[in-house]
Length: 288
Image (cartoon, rainbow, N blue to C red; front, side, top):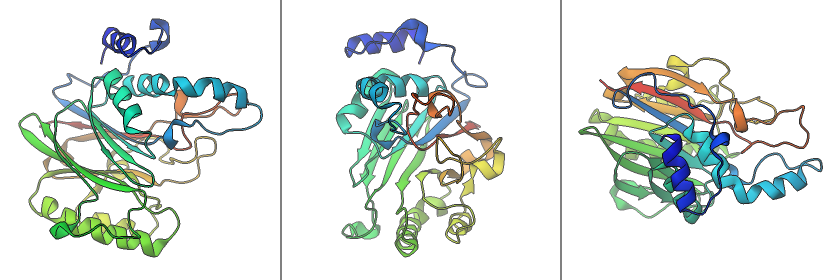
């Protein structure tokens, strides 16, 4: 979305964004029709991070503007798809989507999820289960959802997930349920993207389950720089991922963690803050 459209949308929704604050954008490598860019981001419900005595007053003043800050920062990368973990409310998501010129669907949960896209969202389901079974009581207490995008005459199946943060046995059950449901899309050779906060590092035995199922870790395939995604103040772990399968995978050109701009907390500025405790992951695909 260009600067003029962004500012017009901001004005229409009653949000104040100065033209000078927009800055320069990071364009697609070529025309938008040839490339597809996706970002996965645990946004910590737009609370800002960290909260410390030196930045409490600034953070308090900034929170009413977090919608503009987030939408502006993400717009600089011209994404076609964004998924949120620990999403803000649907009302807030709707305002972000309007600012960015995107459609959206939300996945309620203990820590909600969101899919935003410039492409039409033709179908979506929250916590899909094989044979339309009931939602497992103790699984997906954060979120897991499925959305289908109409992508230039094709379909792209997007899975957004936020798995259990601490219990390996629960994560294993969640992965089992996900792969059982996803198996049909994977076996049919459809374009599939799975992204989100999976709360596991690459040395976790469950990591291999995604690979065995036929998914490719975008950072392993085409990653550049440091792949660590948490925290925004002290990068020590890689738990946020973009996985893909199907024809789209052949067009993967790059993947990186966005450790820059307002996504990071600058240690030299004790009164400053990052948008979240996580860093976003971004991948770009050439459309064949």
